[in-house]
Amino acid sequence: MHKQIDSYILNPIKVNDFINNHWDNHQLIHIQRELPDYFNSVINIEEIDRLVCGSRIPPTNINLAQNNDPLPLSSFCSGDLVDHMKVLALHRRGATIILRSIEQWSPAFLLIRSEFERLFGFEAQINVYLTPASEKSTPPHWDTHDLFVLQISGSKVWRIFEGNRTLPLEHERFKIKEDFVGKMKGEYLIKAGDTFFLPRGVIHEPVAATYSIHISIGIRSVRWLEVCQEALENLASEDGSILRETINFNQAINNEMIKNTISKIISNVDQLKLSLNQINSSQKYKHCQNYIGTLKSNINSCLPTDESRYQLREGVNYSITDVLNKLELVFGNEKILLPQSMLPALEIALNGKPFNLRDLSIQDYEKTALCVALVQIGLIKECASQLS
Image (cartoon, rainbow, N blue to C red; front, side, top):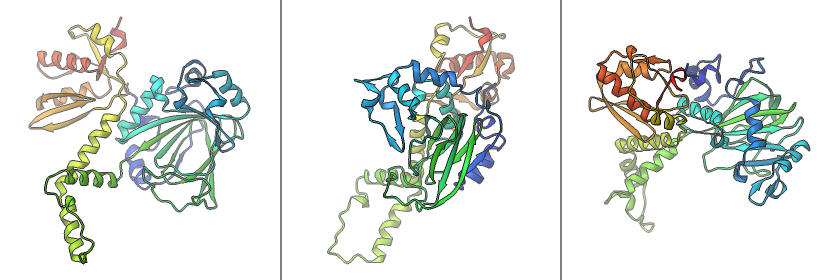
Protein backbone atom coordinates (compact mmCIF):
# COMPACT_ATOMS: atom_id res chain seq x y z
CA MET A 1 0.00 0.00 0.00
CA HIS A 2 1.13 3.54 -0.73
CA LYS A 3 1.81 5.07 2.68
CA GLN A 4 -0.07 8.36 3.02
CA ILE A 5 1.47 10.94 5.30
CA ASP A 6 -1.71 11.51 7.29
CA SER A 7 -1.74 7.84 8.29
CA TYR A 8 1.35 8.16 10.45
CA ILE A 9 2.28 11.84 10.93
CA LEU A 10 -1.04 13.35 12.02
CA ASN A 11 -2.94 10.27 13.18
CA PRO A 12 -5.51 10.37 14.73
CA ILE A 13 -6.15 13.91 13.43
CA LYS A 14 -7.56 14.08 9.90
CA VAL A 15 -5.65 16.13 7.34
CA ASN A 16 -8.45 18.59 6.58
CA ASP A 17 -9.11 19.09 10.27
CA PHE A 18 -5.44 19.81 10.89
CA ILE A 19 -5.15 22.27 8.00
CA ASN A 20 -8.37 24.14 8.83
CA ASN A 21 -8.12 24.18 12.63
CA HIS A 22 -4.40 24.16 13.32
CA TRP A 23 -2.23 25.00 10.33
CA ASP A 24 -4.32 27.81 8.85
CA ASN A 25 -4.94 29.17 12.35
CA HIS A 26 -1.24 28.90 13.26
CA GLN A 27 -2.09 26.83 16.31
CA LEU A 28 0.49 24.75 18.17
CA ILE A 29 -0.40 21.08 18.53
CA HIS A 30 1.05 18.10 20.39
CA ILE A 31 -0.06 14.62 19.29
CA GLN A 32 0.70 12.18 22.12
CA ARG A 33 0.73 8.46 21.36
CA GLU A 34 2.56 6.52 24.10
CA LEU A 35 4.06 4.38 21.31
CA PRO A 36 7.88 4.71 21.43
CA ASP A 37 8.38 2.66 18.25
CA TYR A 38 5.67 4.49 16.31
CA PHE A 39 7.99 5.88 13.60
CA ASN A 40 10.12 2.74 13.16
CA SER A 41 8.36 1.79 9.93
CA VAL A 42 9.26 5.20 8.48
CA ILE A 43 12.79 5.75 9.82
CA ASN A 44 14.93 3.90 12.34
CA ILE A 45 18.00 4.57 14.46
CA GLU A 46 20.11 2.25 12.26
CA GLU A 47 19.65 4.63 9.31
CA ILE A 48 20.59 7.63 11.44
CA ASP A 49 23.63 5.76 12.77
CA ARG A 50 24.67 5.01 9.18
CA LEU A 51 24.42 8.68 8.25
CA VAL A 52 26.41 9.88 11.27
CA CYS A 53 29.07 7.17 11.35
CA GLY A 54 29.24 5.65 7.89
CA SER A 55 28.69 8.35 5.29
CA ARG A 56 30.73 11.25 3.97
CA ILE A 57 28.30 14.10 4.61
CA PRO A 58 30.01 17.40 3.69
CA PRO A 59 30.63 20.06 6.37
CA THR A 60 27.90 22.22 4.80
CA ASN A 61 25.31 19.68 5.97
CA ILE A 62 26.42 18.88 9.50
CA ASN A 63 26.75 21.13 12.55
CA LEU A 64 27.61 20.62 16.18
CA ALA A 65 26.32 22.92 18.91
CA GLN A 66 26.53 23.08 22.68
CA ASN A 67 25.31 25.48 25.36
CA ASN A 68 23.43 27.62 22.83
CA ASP A 69 26.43 28.10 20.56
CA PRO A 70 27.54 26.40 17.32
CA LEU A 71 30.97 24.76 17.43
CA PRO A 72 33.54 25.84 14.82
CA LEU A 73 34.05 23.54 11.85
CA SER A 74 37.70 23.19 12.79
CA SER A 75 36.68 21.35 15.97
CA PHE A 76 35.20 18.40 14.04
CA CYS A 77 36.64 18.62 10.51
CA SER A 78 39.96 17.61 9.03
CA GLY A 79 40.47 19.80 5.99
CA ASP A 80 37.33 19.60 3.83
CA LEU A 81 36.09 16.38 5.42
CA VAL A 82 34.07 15.68 8.55
CA ASP A 83 36.08 13.66 11.07
CA HIS A 84 33.72 11.03 12.47
CA MET A 85 35.86 10.35 15.54
CA LYS A 86 35.94 14.04 16.46
CA VAL A 87 32.18 14.33 15.96
CA LEU A 88 31.49 11.36 18.23
CA ALA A 89 33.97 12.54 20.87
CA LEU A 90 32.31 15.97 21.05
CA HIS A 91 28.90 14.31 21.10
CA ARG A 92 29.93 12.21 24.11
CA ARG A 93 30.88 15.44 25.86
CA GLY A 94 27.44 16.94 25.33
CA ALA A 95 27.43 18.47 21.84
CA THR A 96 24.29 18.15 19.71
CA ILE A 97 24.78 16.68 16.22
CA ILE A 98 22.64 18.43 13.60
CA LEU A 99 22.25 16.84 10.17
CA ARG A 100 20.88 19.38 7.70
CA SER A 101 18.94 18.60 4.49
CA ILE A 102 19.82 15.00 5.16
CA GLU A 103 17.34 13.66 2.59
CA GLN A 104 20.10 14.21 -0.01
CA TRP A 105 21.94 11.17 1.41
CA SER A 106 19.06 8.97 2.52
CA PRO A 107 16.24 7.47 0.43
CA ALA A 108 14.23 6.98 3.64
CA PHE A 109 14.39 10.68 4.49
CA LEU A 110 13.73 11.59 0.86
CA LEU A 111 10.42 9.72 1.10
CA ILE A 112 9.49 11.66 4.24
CA ARG A 113 10.25 14.98 2.55
CA SER A 114 8.36 14.10 -0.63
CA GLU A 115 5.30 13.05 1.39
CA PHE A 116 5.27 16.35 3.27
CA GLU A 117 5.53 18.25 -0.01
CA ARG A 118 2.71 16.19 -1.47
CA LEU A 119 0.44 16.99 1.44
CA PHE A 120 1.18 20.69 1.90
CA GLY A 121 2.28 21.69 -1.60
CA PHE A 122 5.31 23.63 -0.35
CA GLU A 123 9.04 22.93 -0.30
CA ALA A 124 10.21 21.06 2.80
CA GLN A 125 13.59 20.59 4.46
CA ILE A 126 14.62 17.88 6.90
CA ASN A 127 17.08 18.22 9.78
CA VAL A 128 17.93 15.62 12.40
CA TYR A 129 18.95 16.55 15.96
CA LEU A 130 20.84 14.14 18.24
CA THR A 131 21.05 15.70 21.70
CA PRO A 132 22.57 14.21 24.87
CA ALA A 133 20.48 14.29 28.05
CA SER A 134 20.02 17.71 29.71
CA GLU A 135 21.71 19.45 26.78
CA LYS A 136 20.44 22.02 24.29
CA SER A 137 21.82 23.53 21.11
CA THR A 138 20.10 26.89 20.83
CA PRO A 139 18.67 29.67 23.01
CA PRO A 140 14.99 30.70 22.72
CA HIS A 141 14.18 31.80 19.15
CA TRP A 142 11.53 31.70 16.42
CA ASP A 143 11.77 30.28 12.92
CA THR A 144 10.48 31.64 9.61
CA HIS A 145 9.00 28.26 8.65
CA ASP A 146 6.33 26.04 10.14
CA LEU A 147 7.92 23.13 11.96
CA PHE A 148 6.94 19.49 12.41
CA VAL A 149 8.85 17.53 15.03
CA LEU A 150 8.88 13.72 14.90
CA GLN A 151 10.38 12.35 18.11
CA ILE A 152 12.27 9.20 17.14
CA SER A 153 14.03 8.29 20.38
CA GLY A 154 14.09 9.58 23.97
CA SER A 155 12.26 12.73 24.97
CA LYS A 156 12.67 16.48 24.75
CA VAL A 157 11.10 19.40 26.58
CA TRP A 158 10.00 22.28 24.35
CA ARG A 159 9.71 25.54 26.25
CA ILE A 160 7.41 28.12 24.68
CA PHE A 161 7.82 31.85 25.33
CA GLU A 162 5.84 35.00 24.71
CA GLY A 163 7.00 37.10 21.77
CA ASN A 164 6.02 40.10 19.69
CA ARG A 165 6.63 38.69 16.20
CA THR A 166 3.71 37.29 14.22
CA LEU A 167 4.30 35.18 11.09
CA PRO A 168 7.85 36.32 10.22
CA LEU A 169 8.77 36.66 6.56
CA GLU A 170 11.20 34.34 4.80
CA HIS A 171 14.10 36.83 4.79
CA GLU A 172 13.75 37.80 8.46
CA ARG A 173 16.01 36.25 11.08
CA PHE A 174 15.74 36.05 14.85
CA LYS A 175 18.54 38.08 16.46
CA ILE A 176 19.83 36.59 19.70
CA LYS A 177 19.99 39.16 22.55
CA GLU A 178 18.18 41.71 20.36
CA ASP A 179 14.73 40.32 19.62
CA PHE A 180 12.19 40.27 22.43
CA VAL A 181 11.70 37.07 24.42
CA GLY A 182 8.93 37.24 27.00
CA LYS A 183 8.09 35.01 29.93
CA MET A 184 7.69 31.28 29.45
CA LYS A 185 4.12 30.31 28.53
CA GLY A 186 4.42 26.56 28.95
CA GLU A 187 6.40 23.37 28.48
CA TYR A 188 5.68 20.36 26.29
CA LEU A 189 7.31 17.00 26.95
CA ILE A 190 7.63 15.33 23.54
CA LYS A 191 8.18 11.58 23.87
CA ALA A 192 9.29 9.00 21.33
CA GLY A 193 6.43 8.41 18.89
CA ASP A 194 4.91 11.88 19.36
CA THR A 195 4.34 14.55 16.71
CA PHE A 196 4.73 18.23 17.62
CA PHE A 197 3.65 21.08 15.33
CA LEU A 198 5.16 24.51 15.92
CA PRO A 199 3.90 27.43 13.78
CA ARG A 200 6.43 29.92 12.49
CA GLY A 201 7.04 32.88 14.76
CA VAL A 202 6.51 30.95 18.02
CA ILE A 203 9.50 31.37 20.33
CA HIS A 204 10.78 27.99 21.51
CA GLU A 205 13.72 26.41 23.31
CA PRO A 206 14.11 22.60 23.14
CA VAL A 207 16.04 20.85 25.94
CA ALA A 208 16.70 17.10 25.99
CA ALA A 209 15.04 15.38 28.95
CA THR A 210 16.84 12.14 28.06
CA TYR A 211 19.12 11.29 25.17
CA SER A 212 16.99 12.57 22.28
CA ILE A 213 16.75 12.07 18.53
CA HIS A 214 14.14 14.04 16.66
CA ILE A 215 13.44 14.85 13.04
CA SER A 216 12.60 18.44 12.23
CA ILE A 217 10.66 19.10 9.02
CA GLY A 218 10.42 22.74 8.02
CA ILE A 219 7.65 23.78 5.60
CA ARG A 220 8.62 26.84 3.56
CA SER A 221 5.17 28.20 2.78
CA VAL A 222 4.50 30.96 0.24
CA ARG A 223 3.12 34.27 1.52
CA TRP A 224 0.90 36.67 -0.39
CA LEU A 225 3.86 39.05 -0.32
CA GLU A 226 5.76 36.77 -2.72
CA VAL A 227 2.77 36.63 -5.07
CA CYS A 228 2.47 40.43 -5.13
CA GLN A 229 6.22 40.82 -5.67
CA GLU A 230 6.08 38.38 -8.58
CA ALA A 231 3.10 40.23 -10.05
CA LEU A 232 4.87 43.59 -9.75
CA GLU A 233 7.96 42.20 -11.48
CA ASN A 234 5.79 40.84 -14.29
CA LEU A 235 3.91 44.13 -14.67
CA ALA A 236 7.13 46.13 -14.62
CA SER A 237 8.55 43.98 -17.44
CA GLU A 238 5.81 45.20 -19.80
CA ASP A 239 6.69 48.15 -21.97
CA GLY A 240 4.61 51.19 -21.01
CA SER A 241 3.90 49.88 -17.49
CA ILE A 242 3.03 52.55 -14.95
CA LEU A 243 5.67 51.00 -12.69
CA ARG A 244 8.33 52.25 -15.11
CA GLU A 245 7.30 55.89 -14.68
CA THR A 246 9.38 58.28 -12.58
CA ILE A 247 7.96 59.66 -9.34
CA ASN A 248 8.12 63.45 -9.30
CA PHE A 249 8.69 64.39 -5.66
CA ASN A 250 8.53 68.09 -6.56
CA GLN A 251 4.94 67.55 -7.60
CA ALA A 252 2.18 67.57 -5.02
CA ILE A 253 1.36 63.89 -4.57
CA ASN A 254 -2.18 63.80 -3.28
CA ASN A 255 -4.27 60.91 -2.03
CA GLU A 256 -6.27 60.68 -5.26
CA MET A 257 -3.11 60.29 -7.34
CA ILE A 258 -1.83 57.52 -5.05
CA LYS A 259 -5.21 55.79 -5.10
CA ASN A 260 -5.43 55.89 -8.91
CA THR A 261 -1.90 54.59 -9.34
CA ILE A 262 -2.27 51.72 -6.90
CA SER A 263 -5.69 50.74 -8.29
CA LYS A 264 -4.17 50.37 -11.75
CA ILE A 265 -1.71 47.87 -10.28
CA ILE A 266 -3.78 45.75 -7.92
CA SER A 267 -6.90 45.67 -10.09
CA ASN A 268 -5.08 43.39 -12.54
CA VAL A 269 -6.50 40.15 -11.16
CA ASP A 270 -5.36 38.15 -14.19
CA GLN A 271 -1.77 39.14 -13.49
CA LEU A 272 -2.09 38.10 -9.85
CA LYS A 273 -3.51 34.73 -10.91
CA LEU A 274 -0.65 34.30 -13.38
CA SER A 275 1.89 35.09 -10.67
CA LEU A 276 0.18 32.67 -8.28
CA ASN A 277 0.40 29.91 -10.88
CA GLN A 278 4.02 30.73 -11.65
CA ILE A 279 5.01 30.47 -7.99
CA ASN A 280 3.00 27.26 -7.59
CA SER A 281 4.78 25.72 -10.58
CA SER A 282 8.14 26.86 -9.23
CA GLN A 283 7.34 25.25 -5.88
CA LYS A 284 6.43 21.93 -7.50
CA TYR A 285 9.65 21.97 -9.50
CA LYS A 286 11.62 22.11 -6.22
CA HIS A 287 9.77 19.15 -4.73
CA CYS A 288 11.68 15.92 -4.15
CA GLN A 289 10.75 12.97 -6.31
CA ASN A 290 11.63 9.33 -5.72
CA TYR A 291 13.08 8.03 -9.00
CA ILE A 292 14.87 5.04 -7.45
CA GLY A 293 14.30 1.96 -9.57
CA THR A 294 13.33 3.84 -12.74
CA LEU A 295 16.61 3.05 -14.49
CA LYS A 296 16.28 -0.65 -13.67
CA SER A 297 12.68 -0.65 -14.91
CA ASN A 298 13.68 0.95 -18.21
CA ILE A 299 16.63 -1.41 -18.70
CA ASN A 300 14.47 -4.47 -18.03
CA SER A 301 11.43 -3.06 -19.76
CA CYS A 302 9.07 -5.35 -21.61
CA LEU A 303 5.49 -5.03 -22.76
CA PRO A 304 3.06 -5.62 -19.89
CA THR A 305 0.78 -8.64 -19.86
CA ASP A 306 -2.46 -9.31 -18.03
CA GLU A 307 -0.38 -10.84 -15.22
CA SER A 308 1.92 -7.84 -14.80
CA ARG A 309 1.27 -5.94 -11.57
CA TYR A 310 2.11 -2.29 -11.00
CA GLN A 311 1.92 0.23 -8.19
CA LEU A 312 2.41 3.96 -7.68
CA ARG A 313 5.98 4.65 -6.61
CA GLU A 314 6.37 5.95 -3.05
CA GLY A 315 7.53 9.52 -2.60
CA VAL A 316 6.23 10.96 -5.87
CA ASN A 317 4.19 14.12 -6.48
CA TYR A 318 2.08 14.58 -9.57
CA SER A 319 -0.89 16.63 -10.75
CA ILE A 320 -3.75 16.03 -13.19
CA THR A 321 -5.53 19.01 -14.77
CA ASP A 322 -7.97 19.62 -17.61
CA VAL A 323 -6.33 21.27 -20.62
CA LEU A 324 -8.43 21.81 -23.76
CA ASN A 325 -10.65 18.79 -23.06
CA LYS A 326 -7.59 16.63 -22.38
CA LEU A 327 -6.05 15.31 -19.17
CA GLU A 328 -2.60 16.75 -18.55
CA LEU A 329 -0.55 14.56 -16.22
CA VAL A 330 2.48 16.43 -14.84
CA PHE A 331 5.26 14.60 -13.00
CA GLY A 332 8.49 16.53 -12.53
CA ASN A 333 9.46 17.84 -15.96
CA GLU A 334 7.31 15.26 -17.73
CA LYS A 335 3.92 16.09 -19.22
CA ILE A 336 1.55 13.55 -20.76
CA LEU A 337 -1.71 14.44 -22.52
CA LEU A 338 -4.44 11.80 -22.29
CA PRO A 339 -8.08 11.64 -23.42
CA GLN A 340 -10.71 12.36 -20.77
CA SER A 341 -12.04 8.81 -21.17
CA MET A 342 -8.87 7.47 -19.50
CA LEU A 343 -9.52 9.25 -16.18
CA PRO A 344 -11.06 6.20 -14.38
CA ALA A 345 -8.11 4.03 -15.46
CA LEU A 346 -5.63 6.71 -14.43
CA GLU A 347 -7.23 6.99 -10.99
CA ILE A 348 -6.86 3.23 -10.51
CA ALA A 349 -3.24 3.31 -11.63
CA LEU A 350 -2.35 6.16 -9.27
CA ASN A 351 -4.34 5.36 -6.12
CA GLY A 352 -1.39 3.61 -4.49
CA LYS A 353 -2.84 0.07 -4.59
CA PRO A 354 -1.32 -2.71 -6.75
CA PHE A 355 -3.17 -3.23 -10.03
CA ASN A 356 -2.89 -5.16 -13.28
CA LEU A 357 -4.11 -4.49 -16.79
CA ARG A 358 -7.40 -6.28 -16.17
CA ASP A 359 -8.29 -3.59 -13.59
CA LEU A 360 -8.18 -0.84 -16.23
CA SER A 361 -11.46 -0.43 -18.10
CA ILE A 362 -10.03 0.95 -21.34
CA GLN A 363 -8.97 -0.54 -24.68
CA ASP A 364 -6.15 -3.11 -24.58
CA TYR A 365 -3.77 -0.95 -26.59
CA GLU A 366 -4.52 1.98 -24.25
CA LYS A 367 -3.75 -0.15 -21.18
CA THR A 368 -0.38 -1.12 -22.60
CA ALA A 369 0.51 2.40 -23.69
CA LEU A 370 -0.53 3.91 -20.36
CA CYS A 371 1.48 1.48 -18.22
CA VAL A 372 4.56 1.70 -20.43
CA ALA A 373 4.49 5.52 -20.32
CA LEU A 374 3.99 5.68 -16.53
CA VAL A 375 6.84 3.22 -15.94
CA GLN A 376 9.20 5.06 -18.29
CA ILE A 377 8.78 8.41 -16.53
CA GLY A 378 9.11 6.73 -13.13
CA LEU A 379 5.64 7.37 -11.76
CA ILE A 380 4.69 3.70 -11.30
CA LYS A 381 6.79 0.60 -10.75
CA GLU A 382 6.30 -3.09 -11.38
CA CYS A 383 5.49 -4.85 -8.13
CA ALA A 384 8.52 -6.41 -6.46
CA SER A 385 7.10 -9.92 -6.72
CA GLN A 386 7.30 -9.64 -10.50
CA LEU A 387 10.87 -8.32 -10.65
CA SER A 388 13.90 -10.57 -10.92
